[in-house]
Amino acid sequence: MYAVLGASGFLGSYLVKSILAGTDEDVLAVSRSVINNDYGNRVRFFPCDITNQEQVKALAKAIAEGERCKFIDLAFRHNIDTVAKYPRDSWHTNITSLSVLLNELENIECFFFASTDCVYGEGNPGQRFKEEDSLRPISLYGTQKAAAECLVRTKGFHVLRLPYMFGPSLVPGKAHFYDVIKKNLAEDKETELFTDSMRSALDFESVADLIVRLTQIGSPENIPQTMNLCGDEALSKYDLGILLAEKLGKNTKLLRPVPSSTLATDINARRALNGLMDNTLLKSFLGIEEIRIKI
Image (tube, rainbow, N blue to C red):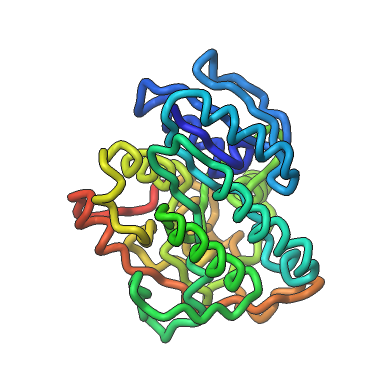
């Protein structure tokens, strides 16, 4: 059995889909919000707010009483500016609640925690961060992810550092940036896209498929405890927009390149211009030669 915490989010929706397509196992879809279950009888929704200790204990009890579980944790307060604006609430969600969850869980076959390239901080132009590099996050979000990683590894579980992800939303009523760009292109509207913030971006489907593949390896003791799970290419949001426009046969001139210094938010938490990651370890472990984004 799989348990996906954060199953109603962008990546969570793809993960449930990938598990159903790539395995014959059932899924416990864990989420604070109700999931519109079009998946069939192999998926069971389990309501759980990660900040509610009683609900977390109920989740742990359900897992302890069932089949040995592959657990994928996507639950985190992700908005970088919201974390900066509400640091104590974010700590409670991202650190305290994770600690409670890890302490309660039993009957776990493997546990993968979704971290981020933000833990590395600012890289030099063209630099690709390796798993063993020092962590120097420049945002509170990155700092809290780094702290969460320590908890997960201390428990003996696994950390996957994920990149910026791109692709159509599978969440009803919630558009991803991909969908915004696609809509603007269809309506001949301009979209401003950053050119100077580089990431090892990957599509949601590929990320989900790779995570599921890792869960199927067998003994988790053989899996590196921390891995960068990302694409080979260095891509800005402008690059991603161009790839999408070309796929759709739309006018690329509708995409206006701008520097990230134009970013204006309530907090304007600092973002790294270079957050590229090296995925050599992952490719070597899985025996694959390349990981390229699918648009």
